[in-house]
Length: 180
Image (cartoon, rainbow, N blue to C red):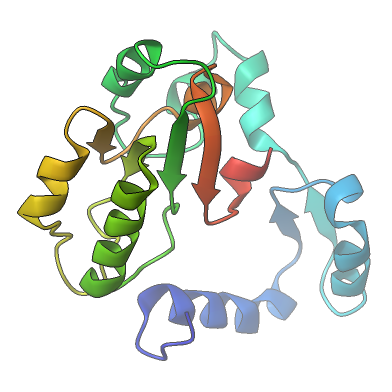
């Protein structure tokens, strides 16, 4: 977003302005992914240390408290995995716009009808703060239309969903946790 009143927009502007005064900067990435960008940043910023990808670390530390936190701080709804188990391989579209994306209720409704009109089974993660300045409300007609082939949840174990055999497509915000 470029809305000057958006809290995340202002947070990133503020942090970007403060970065040159830091002793060092730690980033959840790795050189092979972001090497050229990191080199450019190093020319104008304090030393940069890459420590990523952190989602892969949690897989290797199964007994660690890090593994129980995972890659998010939201309560995951694992019932979607049982729902996916009942679907044919490659038949489900997974929709998740991440934790930063916001949209209007009109845009949410437009996406909803696009999913309904696709005639595909889908798992759609709708976070409580997805709709800017409002509560996400889907039309009753949409809820009836998707009955039996769509599942709505507020959060899920994304890595497990992405690895599930029922998954056939992924509509994403292309955030970090959906790219690796």
